[in-house]
Length: 451
Image (cartoon, rainbow, N blue to C red; front, top):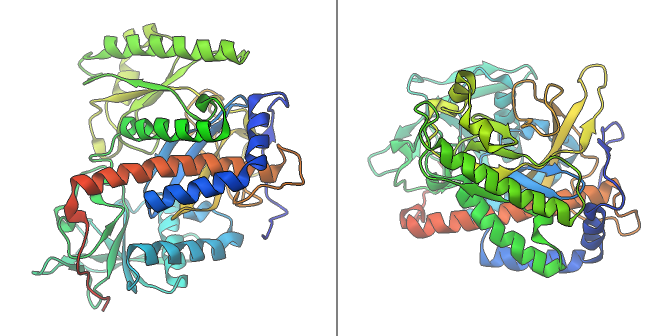
């Protein structure tokens, strides 16, 4: 497997006697059992087409804090792993539709975020290099003819308006795709243009943020974590963030806040009990965030219930809406997992607290990067203004352990990231299975061949 000698590996301050060290040792010792278990899980529940997972390494636990089914950072992956991405894309497309030869990629509507557009361009190149015809179609209402966007990398991205035919298929001028690949998280709602298509839409519309909830995901993840804990004989808490939730919440109108505050206090009690069990001296905290949405919006760190009872106007405003202006009407109250990882500054990128983000296509780990935010503490959400990405951060993609190395050497640390990320991906797979069961129309009988 190729390595990148100039990769920056974070300074890991994990104590060698910490539970994580034992966890990494168990992963190395039981890698064959773990991989066999994953293979059985994927046979029972096919993986999502792709996904990314934000992890937090506290030293005493390693857990996912967010799972994205519309990953938007392919431009931050190590180019050395392009062959791995291509092979995984081929496997993913063949699983979804073995006869497919043309793909319509639908991105987010915003066209001013150059970093996101670079992600779309890289993903388009990967699909093309995997052997598929691919065009980018936009859901923008104001797009009536192809628009070419020049990018800082020297690439050009061409956006096409999408047409829907009378027989229920989508196309762009001169091209009818076999399937539609979404890189748009549907925070603004399910587009009527894509409902009941004669072509597969992946991921399905039902797992966009217009209907998906983080509490549903972490309910599935709790079950996955418990099964994995039984497999390894460990406390599932090592890989599972505890959480609670309430009913309806309206921060602008001060509605439901007391319920959130009480649940914050109950969760803090549970965290303190776990900290006492494992002699953890960190200060407990929780993350309160919108139950639906992404881009790090609608998130705050809380250390007591009273903080919820005395929110200032600025915080209320921040917690009242997420992407696309969607109103926050429910929150997840999640155990805060501090990060003990840090990336040093390099003259161009300031150093700061870091968290690994792992990327997967089908069930394959294809690499990742570190999100770094010099303006945030180890207890805060790093996916916030000021966040930067340490490109090429993973020296290896994390697909296998190093049996001859130390338990916490870089290869084994990255393998641990890959294992926990795949646990989150499995939870997402079970989410998607429920969507397919509830929306049988997402199963397409006779897709068209690409023109």
